[in-house]
Image (tube, rainbow, N blue to C red):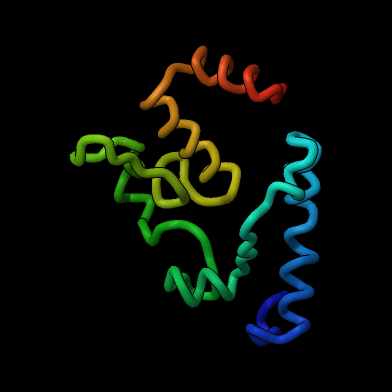
Length: 124
């Protein structure tokens, strides 16, 4: 999909916008009025990942053979520093990376505290 698209062209910008639209619609359903609150919007693409994250063809996930065992969790040796994303447990892909964010958040607050925060934000 992105192989023959050149960064910075109108076609590239249109494709990024097209691919981001379903995500923005989902956010708007969960948080009505969210789009009007956006002050800075930076839409990434696999080309963005290749350029800034040095990911081959914009791929996701760590280079780690299965024999290396489990991916690391959220905790680090640095007090107050947590990790999340596709190179932490549970791994590769947007849902897994999002879940790793939840795992990091659980280090900071309990599930009950999360539910209270969501309730306060009126998110089901």
